[in-house]
Image (tube, rainbow, N blue to C red; front, side, top):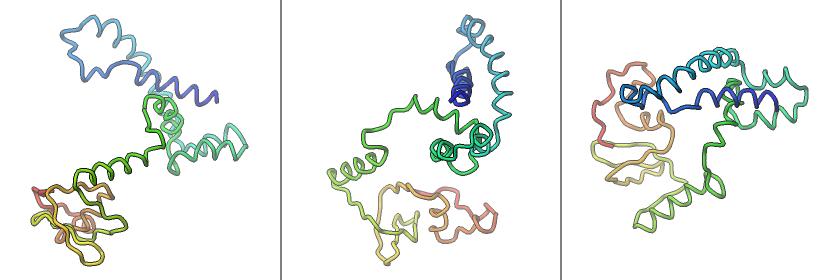
Length: 184
């Protein structure tokens, strides 16, 4: 817990002030002198410490405890080999987010409900295999065609590009065949 608290403190330094890139520092020199300058010294020191925490979180936690259940309880929230600074720092950032009651899956249910209530149609258990952005239609794995006015792709981006005929840049490594203006 002390290790998580330490990294949460690092996150408090990193995110403890308004991003200077979004401020007009010419108009607010007092903020620059009284907030940003003192913060810069803490920031540089903190970044140096965070840069030492690049190892995968599982490996780092094994140095702190042999309790596999505790390691699993902490690390289960992250992809394999997630850097320690990101994983343990997330517990600080998590507190800044608001999550819907019932979890994020509720967002999907509410979106489906909204679309249907407003005359839209949702087809579940349907795999899209072809996207034709010029003619604005998709084809599913059963050969059914469906037109669209606007396409919202909420799946794997590489799969979207593989679904558009004539685009082979993902496998060839060349972006020359990529259409300039996809009307999606």
